[in-house]
Length: 89
Image 1 (tube, rainbow, N blue to C red):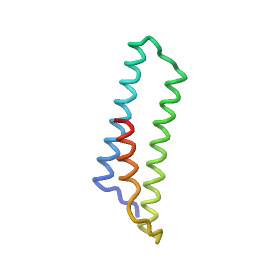
Image 2 (spheres, rainbow, N blue to C red):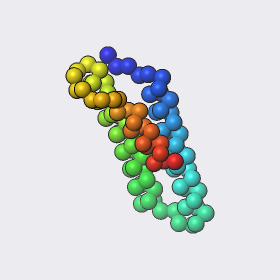
Image 3 (cartoon, rainbow, N blue to C red):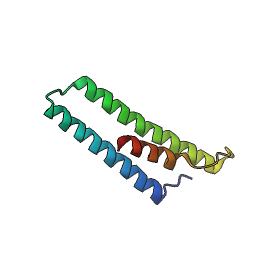
Image 4 (cartoon, helix red, strand yellow):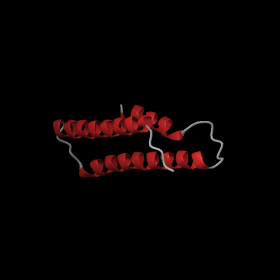
């Protein structure tokens, strides 16, 4: 049984909003400096995709932990979400 809590919903929305804002401000900054580079844009989007994959892995581990005895001291999803938010900030 997969449980998606309200906390996880808010953290996911916050991460997506921060990722979008970071991308937009990066494009604006590059445009102002007249240095838009598709290579840098691809690298940045690759990092963002990696964040989303990392969150998916953490959510999966947390879900497995509910049904097995992994004995992790805490849930990973909120910790990693907050880490990504700080990076994006």
